[in-house]
Image 1 (spheres, rainbow, N blue to C red):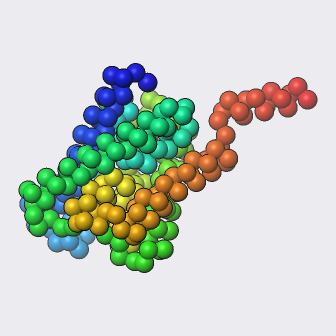
Image 2 (image 1 turned 180 degrees about the horizontal axis):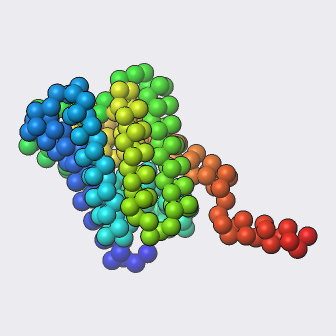
Image 3 (image 1 turned 180 degrees about the vertical axis):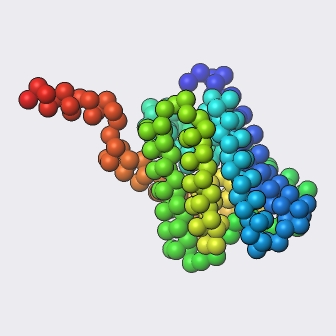
Length: 242
């Protein structure tokens, strides 16, 4: 990776992470304050999730335009595991910190603009159940993402993004009453840093360790259950030779 492309990715990660934490807040402001829907109003919830899907399409487009920009550490971690060691070090040492910094700056500006907007995602169950929830949600979304990358052609942007967005929204709803259903350590850290509890045992284990473990397990499981096509072709050729 060239130096210019590296800096470009870091800038893209920072800006997209900044924008991502703002997107969820702006959706809530639009639905609950501007349109005055109740927090338990079914129509309001449907509209909020529909806007979330639209926002994910927008960020998928930004990722394509920036040639790899991302707002979620788990996304870049999953791809770096399969790459070379230098790419892995760049991801751990530079890209993920850039995403975390973008989220922190975004949340600080949000709280300055909307002081009463809330305190962000919080753990509502015990630490073990929370870690299991975030780990399982992460495992599921990483498996889905890897499957889409393998099975759907690269040119099928709409189909891939549509399935991925609906999957993320569904998993978010499933985990929202337990951990917030975040599946994004950087955005959670932004809110936790603002609250001052970003170094607590609960935050580290539930929103960092569990998702990272879920990501690693998903990548390894996918490799085991669905080996690359090249390996499949080599096995087929070997059988023919036998």
